[in-house]
Image (tube, rainbow, N blue to C red; front, side):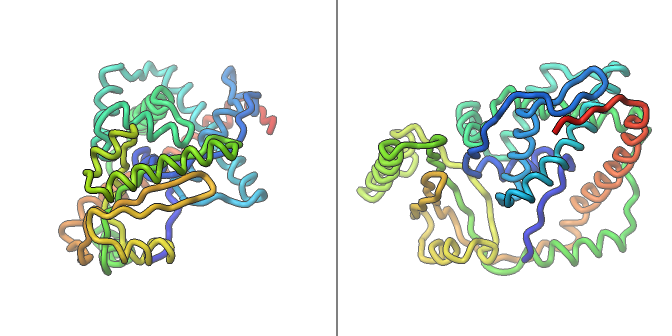
Amino acid sequence: MKKIIPLLLVGLAACLAPMLAAGPGHAEIVDRIVAVVNDEIITMSELDQMTKMVQASAGVQPKSKESQALKREMLEALIDRKLAKGEAKRRGITITDKELDLALEDFKKKNRIPDDAALTQALAKSGITIKELRQQISDQIQQERLVFIALGAKKAEIPEAEVRKYYDMHFKEAGGGNQVRLQVVNMPLPPDASAGQKEEIKKKAEAVLKDIRLGGSLQEALGKHSLAPQDLGFINQADLAPQLGELIGKLRPGEVAPIQTPEGFQLVILVEKRSGKPRSFEEAAPEIRNLLSGQAIQKQFVEWVKTLREKAHIKIML
């Protein structure tokens, strides 16, 4: 199955959920102005944050030349976001704290995150704070409302043939083969970690494994060391990197595999195995219709933002 890089801003949760399992970035954040949009500025820290989010969700670290192209693409997206936020403000579209609280709870539920402490720990691995996440969610809700108010956008009626085509291309392929439900415990190294810091993280990983192998429960072992697992849900085993797939194939449910990466250490827990069965068309159709309808509205929004650009003063300094 081919890996598909998710589109920016199509869905916040879809974009952020994989990020929670990703390791930390090492890019230095330099807070300087990279663009001016009317009376708003875009800083390098904002640009780096969005770039890291997309890289994490895509599961790739592009080469230097590709990274520069990605940054420019993210800058254009940030400009569109600033224009949309300005228009939303002009139209009096605001998001209350209560709405944000509910949206954040929904985000935690969808990503199987038990509490704010676990969320803080997960976000920290990618250099994001809860405050910044709340702002991202607020921007997303505001943009959705702006689309409906400014464009009078309604959910598009998606032809049955188009739904069927999408199902055949994506859902049938995604359902086959053996699947594994994994949890991951990340123990990242700090940027420019010393040999002593690397050894300390390594010993912590070894201590957790030792506690488990001596008969302790996984929950107790992780709690003892102030660690929390992130549930990745079911994944097609064939989609895993070959070495990881081979390693997972040797585990029984409940067992843990240690993995060392340049960014630190990970403990991968095999929760459950099952034979993958494709979802029926009837089961998947409502989800596909919502997805395709959202994409259609997003296209309308992109075209509408172009009209805002024509009237705006934009200066890029990247």
